[in-house]
Amino acid sequence: MGKYLLKLPKMGESVAEATLTTWLKDVGDSIAIDESIVEVATDKVDSDVPSEVEGILIEKKFQVNEIAQVGDVIAVIEIAGEDKVSEEEVLPDPLPEIKETPKPDPIAVIEAAVSSAQTTIQTPATPASSSNRFYSPLVKNIAKEEGISLEELETIQGTGDKGRVTKKDILGYIDKRTTAPGQSEILEKQIDHAEPIPVSISGQDQQIEMTRMGKMISDHMVNSRKISAHVQSFIEVDVTDLWDWRERVKGKFQKREQEKLTFTPIFIAAVVQALKEFPLLNSSVVENTIIQKKGINIGMATALGDGNLIVPVIKNTDHLNLVGLARAVNDLSIRARENKLEPDEVQGGTYTVTNVGNFGSITGIPIINQPQVGILAIGVIRKMPAVIETANGDFIGIRRKMMLCHSYDHRIINGAMGGQFVKAVADALEQWDTSIDF
Image 1 (cartoon, rainbow, N blue to C red):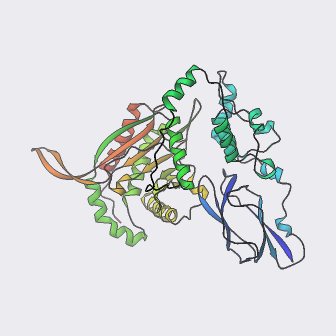
Image 2: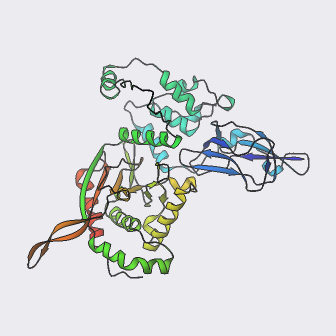
Image 3: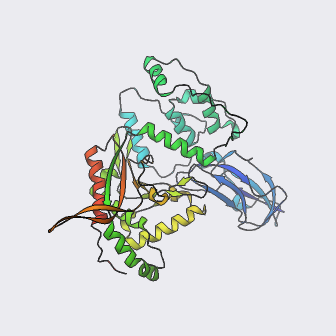
């Protein structure tokens, strides 16, 4: 009998590791080709790892909740054949594969250049190249955010494979780390980090553990508030003509394109038009440097069945017409709710749209999806009494209106631009070409 080494596959250009969440097979179980063996989770999306061979699972290399690197052997499967390890699955020394240089990220390159050029006191970075010890990108990012130097990082006791420092290790270290803060740090702690008030729990109260995704969303939202100076601009939009146009063409659109025409691709088309007029909103901020993105990749917040949100990204949105947008929106929405998104499909966004009107909300104040600098919340469309101006005078009529709330990063987007941008979105919707037919 031979052996097949099942490795953790690559799950996206920027994904270097994954947490094993559930073993779907036990040692001794028979495995069919393309049958899922284990479920894994990254900081972006959940997935499963199927087998490319038929055989019997004889060894698990990782336990549940342990973190594996891309390329690590996570299981061994016994297959029919010669008594040797399958040659096509023999792994080289894992160190070179882990240190393989990925395609450079422009933001990371500029961030490194800015950090080395600045002469003011900054939070020490953690250059992996000066250490023989491997640190995952997640651990290095946490260390940088918490001001942990490489020397200090080297002292942390790792519980991972070969003493590797895991996310749990560094977070535990941060919780226990004590420093002698200066007066400004003491004041900051008094203002922003007051001791939480103990919560009394009676016998009838229910304690609910946050899900893994819930914890990640919580951390992402709290960190965004810490990073960006959030400012909002609101505007009311009259979409009566747009509503009537969609009612008139949606049946023909579905018959011709085999796709539903919802309002979401229409809203996204208006946002893309406004981003072309105000390209600074299609940016990220790295230290004191603004990275203005060339491509427009729109993220659309999508509600899942468990109440959580995920943000699939429509890449190169500015190159799609309304039909292409409708196809992309419908496809990503369906696969998001079925948990079938690929890791690359939930990253790389440059601006985000969230339709809070789907839940009946008049409006909402969204939190920026880092590292972006803007996000648009779209409220429910309602019939409203409105003043209608005509050449023969003003009168009151019934119109369909909705609210837009634009949250933007005041570090680089001032109030004038933030307001002008959302006004441009409103104008695109109010002036929609209703002569388009299908």
